[in-house]
Length: 340
Image (cartoon, rainbow, N blue to C red):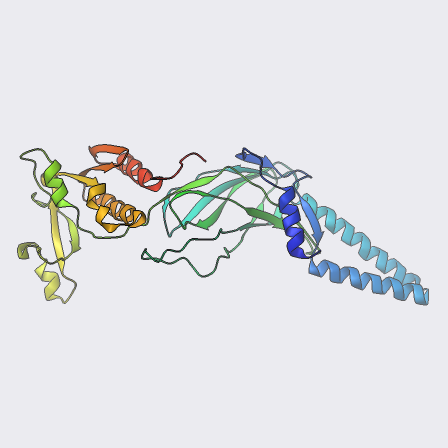
């Protein structure tokens, strides 16, 4: 039986239940152990020593061989106990955008009187779809570097596991492997803990940086001030054909920098409506959601009040972190089943 078949066999024994827990303890049924390559080489050396001792009737060889066997058995016990009884709990995970690395926080609770040394955590990335329509490409390597931590006796520590976000919606932590070869590396004990732990992934922000002012004017109350009509300086944006020359930062142009447009706000900030009609011409749902995502970030950074209108979604214009999060979440799960 090859190592790949062995891996599939142990994973099938660790198959997830209908409802995944948010905390679990690594019991004997969850922890597996086998010799490593060094362990098999060690066993071969001991067998050769035993055969030589039997051939020459060497008592010293017998004694040394049995001493090595006893050391290997004690090592196997310590390797297994290094994982046995470790409690794992889910922590926090912040929302991310497509293309970023989600950081999953796990809490490791060691209630034993001995420390857990060199606990290795490995996250496995799923297959990712093609993203030729977006401005980023997934990394060529799907291998995520492992994380190795120590947990002192009677202590509780956290470990951060990272996973790339390839598409919007929910990103489950998914398949992870916790393993250890401590103390001598002759045996490897491992487990496949499966937890109810997911991150929210927003669409990749991309598209035109100019807010849809035409849509704004149609939806604003009569007499409402326009963006850029105030006296407070809010920041810069890239120059676009048709911008007024009086808003160009000519000092930056004189320094041979990029052409930038000064944006003003304060009391002059108005209401901006971000609607599906404004992005429908893109003819691709992911491109449209990426454009709306970028507009939300720009409007929030400028302090403007913005509303969001999508089929089945209608958020009245306002501003603030809570409103921003609600709008981005609606884009993240648009057209998807939000229930896990």
